[in-house]
Amino acid sequence: MSQPFDKLLDARGLNCPMPLVNARKEIGKLELGQVLKVVATDRGSVADFQGWAKVAKNVELVGQETESTDGANVYVHYVKRTA
Amino acid sequence: MAEQLNDGVWTAGDLLERLERRDKFFVLDVRNRDEFERFRLEGRSPVPAVNIPYFEMLELGGKDEMLDSVVAYVERDLADQLPSDLPILAVCAKGDTSEFVAQGLRRLGYASANLKGGMKAWGEHYATRALVEGPDLAIYQVSRPARGCLSYMVASAGKAIVIDALRHLYPYLDLARATGLTIEAVIDTHGHADHISGGLALAAKTGASYYLHPYDAIHPIDVLPATIPYEFIRDSQLFPVGQHQLEALHIPGHTLGLVAFRLDDRYLFTGDSIFIRSIARPDLGGKAETWAPLHGRSLRRLLGLPGGITVLPGHFSSLDEADETGRFAASLDDLKKRNDGLVVLQRESEEGFVRYLLESLPKFIPEYVNIKRVNTGLLVPTGEDAATLELGKNVCALSQAQAASAGGKQ
Image (cartoon, rainbow over all chains, first blue to last red; front, side, top):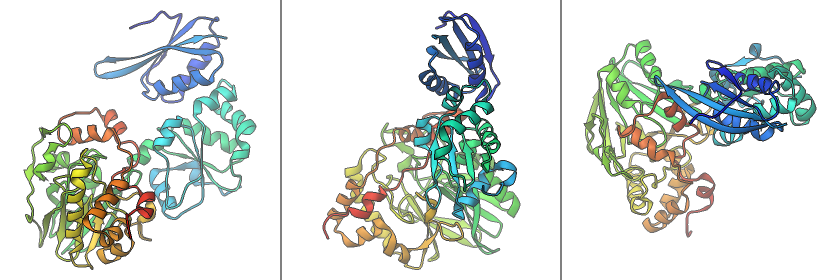
């Protein structure tokens, strides 16, 4: 199930911590209420985005999904700027 | 400040060496809290550690770049928890994020190293040690230290049998190549619950036969037959290896098809029955009450073997169970005096021992049901799923704390 988003960040092929470091930079460039879609291939990003959203005061994790293409998983995170 | 370490990088092998030597160091682990709780670095003695997930450092450090955030966070919020007189090992899941942490710590003047490859590399590290090595007989103990798993290669006259091959095959293939040995048989002492067996894959790779007791070719909880090809092991069966032979001893209890192997009166490969400090649990098939009396009778059978025989177990719970050379081996007579479970076994009636077993059961590990499915061919995991299933140390032994105090009536 896909969600609406305002900006796409392609973090495929990047190792931890770069998907999250880059997402954090991009979130800072969004308007309040806008959603960033992050696509990553690092499986650990699923738990890490959840943990980050809990500690960060300006973001909310509004959705996560796993897509499988050609046997390779892509992990998708939707992060909203809230403050 | 402590002295600078090997260019700031420790391999999993370096780490093992330091843990075995009881080197003092401190761990800053930046994985998620649940990952940290489930699978920690453990040595011969406790390793002091603090766990701060990296995304907390990043967010609370408040800088755009990871390295700058590490420096800001550590300086402001963590300095009072870090020792200034010990090396600090930075640890994460795969070793990339912890490299930023180690660099940040060094920038602040700490002696810090990164664990190369992270906990994944540590979890998949193997160590091979010869217990005896001659042309007539060689026995190698191949361990996976982070998981507490032990396996063996028994060799004589150029031929070898592998017992309880672990998931990665390279330690056995490398050893066979280096010593010029031909692997003729691969044996699992039982259907493993805590780790994915490499037995069938190693047999396929080397053209050897794969052996398992047929009772363990039925998944105990699904009650479904294995779909993998295997040769039957029966009680008293002899497995020739060069000038020697291994004799199978069927000792049901931990599983219904558990088999120990005896090499003359010299070596006893106990699988999951007698470990160094403890004994195996009888409940992983979901039938603790039914299996516990069998387990007791099987252990008594092993106690009747010559006391000088060297016990070579399938697991350890702590690196501290190794002797000073890092090998996990002890005589049966020695273990009768210091193995918690064997001490109780010698003291108790059958009923008292069953009571002790049932009082000492650690928590059931849900993943173990799926691992048994993998080992019987009922479930095929991807590589990453396999690693996740196996994460953490084995829990095949009875609970140690209880073992020390419990044991029913005197």
